[in-house]
Image (cartoon, rainbow, N blue to C red; front, side):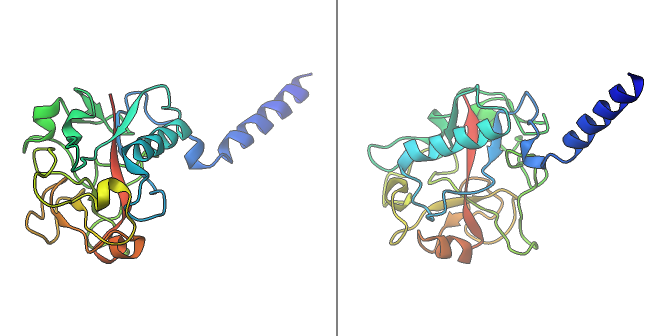
Length: 212
């Protein structure tokens, strides 16, 4: 009997060890992440509803689907602000590290966002400047304070275009080029809206997700 119990225990341990990293649950505090993958159609995210659903799906895959997730994205018309979509905080990454206390803290110089803390839902570090390929451009469509632009479209047709247009992006690693290279949410505009255009300026169609 003892030999049988030992054998069953060994098999169970081996099974757990062979599970892929993506099957591991995120820290129970997780309420913020960068998507580990975009929908694959450039900045066409299926609008805000499609982007929110993508956040929810990725969160569910790592055991955090019991919360309501929203994409940190603004739209131009009717003028929806990213900052108004994500709850009140505090927010923690997939390793349980707090990155911001509240909306004011998130949009201040005191937030703890950066390459080593702005992780994807699996707890992985997203490529930044100096990595190959560089993927630090994160789609936001926002001004630095998290509000929607009042002038031209900066959201690739409210996240429905994979061709013409441009989207405002931030640098999750807080470095690079553009008018505000250290901004996590408002560094510069993309070259276009296709997947190739996003990749050409240092992105891959990723965006931020927050739990309300």
